[in-house]
Image (tube, rainbow, N blue to C red; front, side, top):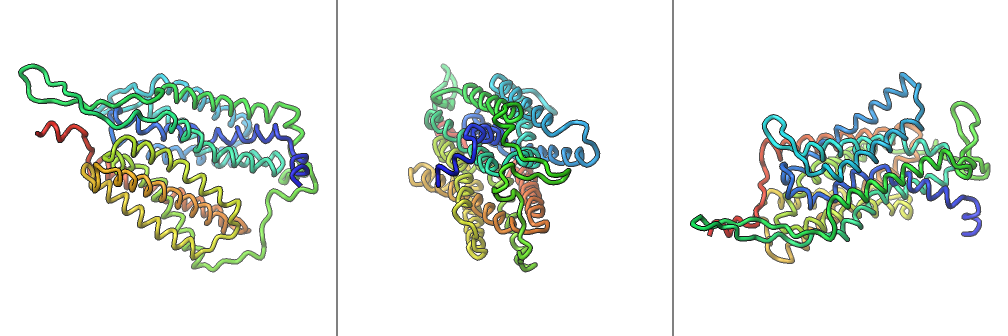
Length: 430
């Protein structure tokens, strides 16, 4: 059976599709897992994640503009647009490796303009990939769509593994910098990681260059062209293997009560409000008081938890709605807990104990894994819908994420609800 499956596909084309999928989100995911090394030196400080989350929401202008473009014009094909997007991601990430620590003044305040500006370009690529990259894979046999999705999942997993290897060098130390005849002063010293942020961004840019080359291969290599579907008419494509299952299949017997339909959309909006908007913005305030190591482990392991939870969709075909409701309640409780820890910054419970570090890491990994599983489950339930279920799921995702980002950005930067922690404050006050 395995031999038959492998003989019915081209492994090299699988690799090209996987690398193409990797290019969707690896840029923004890679920048995010570098936050433990960026927040300590950026002028925005612990508020940097809130700025990044807000920019990712603004980057949703990319798919909106693309949708308007295909509705009113078609002078440039999707292939050319994808080349431009991947090319811009490669160039911006290579530039980021040299400019990420450069700042400039805006309205009298210093900001990480190069970091945030170049990150915005990679965010546009990621957001637009959902309406451009995956639909482009319709041009190939359905079996290669799975390879693309695996690559998209790895776009969060691979940067996290590399960031774990990189490390943060340990927790900060206080160095006495008191000058003669002066008051007692300490300076926070952050240990060096195994390799620099510049090296990490160069690795990301090289990965994106491979993704660009893979897409070029999908379009130019003969072996990849042979795996394209045969156009039947102007609106439908069928696989070249006529015995393969159709790429798009709806179930006309699909039924769901209106109440359940609305409840699932509300659940999707809520978990995206938490997972895409609120929680990433306050993660630094929730974790950094426990030390750099706790924050580093939280960011990297959380980035793995979501994609791994979504992979359960290959095993769990029909998730139970009641189970999803229970998990949503558990997610809400864990979110309240980590929000409470952020509110208690700079002095959260169990701050200087290994138990506190372990609890905060487990709580964050758990909530991110649950959010990934719930999103997968709700999408799976709407997949057979012959109507607009998946469309409304996408709307709920974007609305929830945007509201969460706006509210939390205001709480962090204008209400000043959260306080930063200085490792040397206690020594200076003695």
